[in-house]
Image 1 (cartoon, helix red, strand yellow):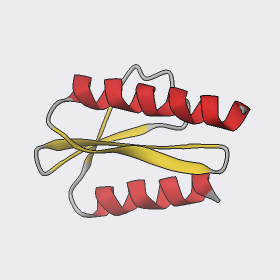
Image 2 (cartoon, rainbow, N blue to C red; image 1 turned 180 degrees about the vertical axis):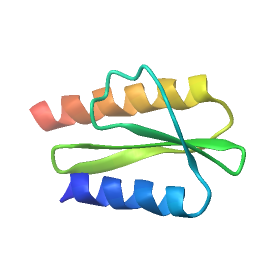
Image 3 (tube, helix red, strand yellow; image 1 turned 90 degrees about the vertical axis):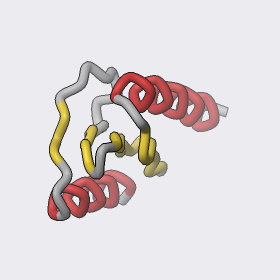
Length: 78
């Protein structure tokens, strides 16, 4: 379900003018979107839907997404 929600949110952003951005993120389910001069990253991990909203630049968005992803992996393993 989280994966479907992530996909739906990505599609929503694209429908309202967002553009897909290629990235080298190691998060397999991640999508990066550039919209309204900000970067959004949406991903799912297990039961979780997560992401980064309104990052000023691509590097910051990627760094935060990786930190969030790693924390979710830690919590899921507990």
